[in-house]
Amino acid sequence: MKTELKNTLRAIGLLCLWVAPFAQADTKLEDFSIMAVGPLDGRAVVKSPDGKLQVMKLGDTLPGTQAKLLQVLPDKLVVEDTVGKEGQPAVKQTAWIIKSNKPGEKTQVQRFDSQGPPPVVREVTVGQPATPGKAKAKTK
Image 1 (spheres, rainbow, N blue to C red):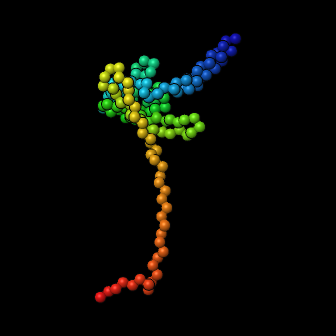
Image 2 (tube, one colour):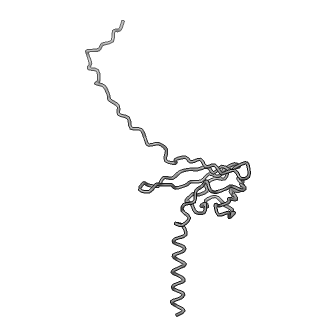
Image 3 (cartoon, helix red, strand yellow):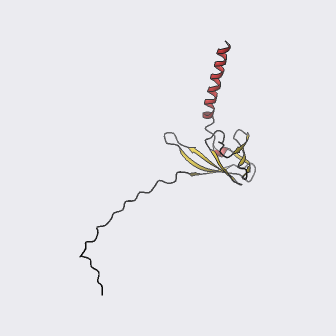
C-alpha cells in the first residue's frame, strides 16, 4: 500500500513539473514591472504579474515566458524572447523592457526582430562584349 501511494505521488509530482511551464506560457513581457536595476552587477528586481518580486541575473528566464535576460541597463532590461503564432515557426526577438519613471505607470516594451529583413535578390543583365575592329578609338 505504501509503495502504491509513493508511486502515485511521484506521478502527480512529475505531471505538475511537466504542466507548469505550459500553464504560464501566456505571460506577456508588458505584465512585468522593473522595480530596481543594478547595471554594474547585471541584476534587476522584477515584479511578476502575480505580484511576486524576483531578483534576476544575466542568463535568467523571466518566469512564465521564454524571455532570457541579456543585459541590464540603467533604464531598461534587454531580453531575447522567442515568439511565434500557431502554424508558423518561432522567431527570436530582442526586446527592451523599459523601466517606468512614475509609480503605477505601465511598463513599455519595444521589440526588434533578431533575424532582420530577408535578403534582396537582384538580377543583373550583362551586355554583349564589344567586337574588336568595329569601335576604334581615334588617336592623334
